[in-house]
Image (tube, rainbow, N blue to C red; front, side, top):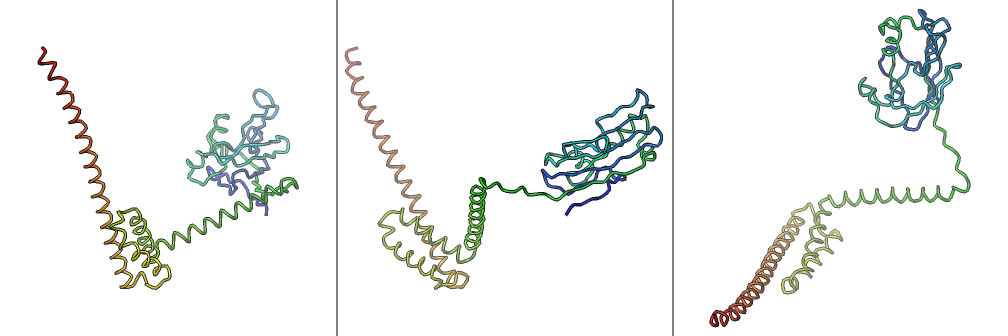
Length: 280
C-alpha cells in the first residue's frame, strides 16, 4: 500500500521508512512571500524580478545525499522529484538523531542565500510538500530466467534446512546427554591414537559406554550419568598424561640420537687432528 505524508518543516530531518533501492516521490512547492521565489524538494526557482533575473538553482528544500538518497529525476515545472534510497551512510541523519534514511532540510543554506535567518525564511514560506512511498513492485520473471530462479530457490531452501539442522545439532550438543556423548567420542578418538598396550583394555569398554549413551540407557543428568562422565574424564586424563609422557620420550630419544651423532663427529675431528699436530 502506498504511503503519503506531509514533509514536516518543524524538524531538522524526517525519517522515511524505505529499504535500500526503494523509491520515494516528493510533490509540491513552497513560495516565499517576500521575494516570490519557489522552492520544491530539489530546485529553487527565482522570478524575473529577482536580482540577476529569472533563474533556477539545483538546490531545493532537501539535502538528499547526506540523508541517504539519490535524486533520479526532477521537474521544476510540476515540482515532482523522484529519489531512491542508496543504503549509503547518512551523516545528516546521525547528526539530527534520526534513523536513516531521512530527509534533511536545507533551511540554513537557503536563508543565507537571501541574507536572512532561518526563522525569517520559514515565516515567509507558504505551501507544502508531500512525500509518497510507493509499494515495491516485484518485476516479473522472464521465462528464460525461470530455471535459474527455481535453482536459486532450491539452494535457498537447502541453506535454510542446513541452518536449522546446524542449530538443532548445536542445541543437542549443549544438552547434558550431548556433552556426555561428546566426551565419550573424544575419549574414543584418543584411545584409537594411543599406545595399543594402553588402548586394548579400555577401547571396548568406552565403545560399549558410547553405545549405551546413544540408546539413552543412562540419563546424563542423573547420578549414574555423572558417574559415567567422571570415569570417562579419568580415562581422558590418563590418556593425555600418557601422550605427554610419550612425546617427552620421543623428544629425549631424538635428543640422544643428535647428541650421539655430534659426539661421533667430534671424535672423528679429534682423530684427524691428532696426527696433524704430531707432524707439526
